[in-house]
Length: 106
Length: 116
Image (tube, rainbow over all chains, first blue to last red; front, side, top):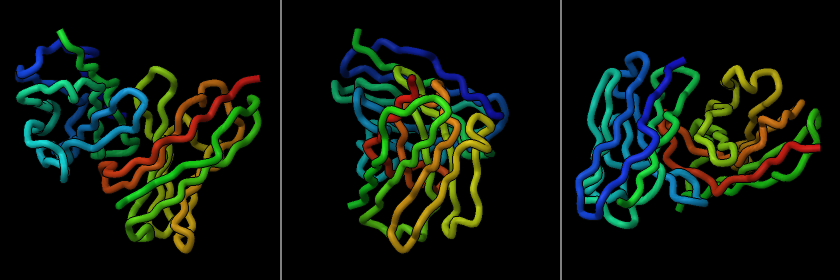
């Protein structure tokens, strides 16, 4: 199985630029996607295929990477962005998710 | 507007069965692969099952293979998850999701608690 590794938490200040990383245990090409999950809500797709912004998602979100190393960037961070962020690969079955990165305010 | 609404969750004893349903609207259901994803309390996301557009192909991780069955009724725009031989570790919120490799629409989730 492809294991996705994310940092557990990041502390940020509003207005700051933040990068959330996801490392895959093997190459997933660009079959990497990012989700935001706020407390008590279902996940929401932000970025698909590494760098494509989902319709309706603010342009302060962006994604990059290929192979094994991927990044989700939020610039600038707003209060509404405080949430958990998950990466997910669809290069091979079983589809796997990272354990999530919790974005917190400093 | 794309909508996915799960139902059928609840409290069930270990070893028993439960069937979840997901009603889809706002898109042509039969054109999309669909998936179930679960989230244990305070934990991350885990993919549980995927089904092809016609229902002829299904996929599961080892953790549920042989116990869970995903199915669909395209005439009713509905997705199902039959869960048998439930274990305490199956306790989670179960989400149905529209699948295109990535999951671009999610339901609000159905809570399943496996406990005696």
